[in-house]
Image 1 (cartoon, one colour):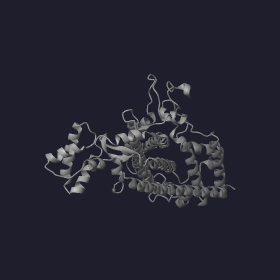
Image 2 (cartoon, rainbow, N blue to C red):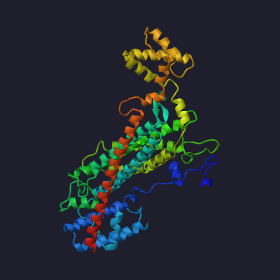
Image 3 (cartoon, one colour):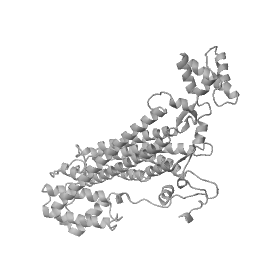
Image 4 (cartoon, rainbow, N blue to C red):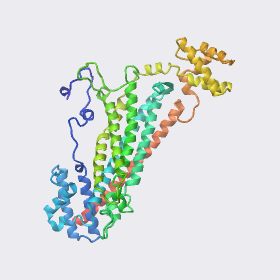
Length: 502
């Protein structure tokens, strides 16, 4: 691939194919039709429906057997890549039914839709698709958190300046910064867990929104498809077709915002002006004209995808604001928006995981900046308050003036002379030595002092690390349990299908 680029000779190693596709977006590669993604879900859901119809006696066992054998043939064709979306059909649902009708005849193929509307069929397919997306994204988040934890422990005592307004604020460590991103991402994982709790319900049996007169067993199809149970009102899932999509879009948009913030932070810290971190070559690109360029393009694409996600979220939210009860054709577009959103954001987690794993630090530069620009002024002010029991507002005025006087001396920390002038101007007589002033502003002293939970002191960083690790393990356990339940559902499905077919 090297020869296909207009840059790269200044790089030690080049981005791999996956990263190049991530950077190229849709410039050179399109996306498949929406229903292409729904084929495996439509096959699973339709067969579960046929199994249930057979179990209920709505279809005879011989009818169920013949129809399910037809589905098995269709599955084999799909797995071999010989069954794909055909644009001559309206959608994948009609294409599947047409295939079976042509193969088995109308007497059989014409019965698979018994007790079912295309409305609950589509919504079922989408619930199954969205559920898989949720589990995949939750796992990606946990893997990224685990990488952040690993590097956070490595750099738990690596001094760096904390920033507010892009200016030096107070001293922190790079490990503490990484843990802060981990906390945000763990909340993202919990949003996905919340989605699962809300929407892992079976809409099959809703029909067009008002049920059916056939005696359907919705609990059975729920077991066959791994749902927690059926939706308890058949009109709700049809009318609110946009809601599971919007809820997932919201969760993923918050996640991409967090990742975009992480990306912007790393972009700035990697500039020549900051020179605190360096991205690996495989996450950078060059210029078609400037030989020296080493651009943080992977991180810039993360930011772009966050913006894209927000736009699609607004579209999904807008869809739900004025729907009349029952099915409305406009909700069909929710399928496109959520699939486009997931297609865009899906690679971000693995890319950011690799960025973190391969990130290199410049600890000397970090420490240099952690000792300048009056970063110890706030700890000095707080020490004065504690030691001499004077109001914080008065101590703040002292240190503010001391900073101004020290700046005039060309200093980057509060000097003895600067503080003395400030105290004199405010008519305060505080016995503070030159040694104390210097020691109190020291980053090492600041991070070794007793501090509240969550602070960047070394003790609190270790507590945060342990806590985040344990909470991440609980999400990992939740994931394992849900996947095990889905596997069990598929085993039940296979067993029930075998009982009818064989």
